[in-house]
Image (cartoon, rainbow, N blue to C red; front, side, top):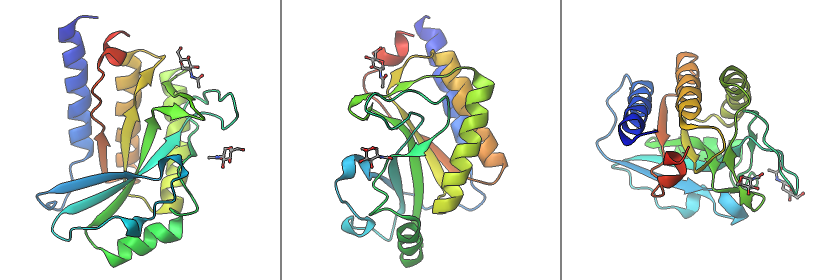
Amino acid sequence: MGFSELFILLFTLHSLLAMASRQPTAPKSYLFSEYIGAEDNNVKFSDVPINPNVEFHYILAFAIDYTNSSSPSPTNGEFKIFWDTHNLSPSQVSSIKTQHTNVKVALSLGGDTVRGKTCNFTVSSVDSWVSNAVSSLTKIIQEYNLDGIDIDYEHFVSDQVTFVECIGKLITALKNNGVITFASIAPFDDDDEVKKK
Ligand SMILES: *[C@@H]1O[C@H](CO)[C@@H](O)[C@H](O)[C@H]1NC(C)=O
Ligand SMILES: *[C@@H]1O[C@H](CO)[C@@H](O)[C@H](O)[C@H]1NC(C)=O
């Protein structure tokens, strides 16, 4: 796939994300986002200083569509929670949001590794992945009273066309169902991972 096609695909994805994250109320002008909860490091929401003058997003890392075995296998969009649920529980989410009205909490999909192995974006079919992702993520997002999702896949088994379709459809469905109010996509400096597909 050539550079211009890649550019168009990425542009399409960004446009979808921009549409999905349009909000009815004007957001504060500055946004600060911080990943939290990966690798069981015992970090709590209250360990991070919150500037009251910015929109502040915590991003729970990560929800992953893999089994949690010593040799994890992909579950085609059936996400489960891999962040530190002891320190970042539903009641701790409610509490930090009540204390700070500028705080929103999202979860991030993917990440670099699962149980120490590369976490690969792996899809059986677009429709089945999207359907599984919408139902499993809706459950988690409602249980934790979350506001948005972030996309942080860094390694790909399925190709970029599949990635853009899956993520675009997922965000559109969650947004249309009123499950999330915003979505973001993580910048990732090694674009060879995407280009080679
Ligand atoms: C995954 O399994 C390990 C080892 O059994 C366990 O310590 C960990 O809490 C599990 N994580 C999840 C997300 O279920
Ligand atoms: C992801 O793909 C890489 C490269 O093909 C492979 O080495 C790795 O084991 C895969 N990850 C998992 C969790 O299966």
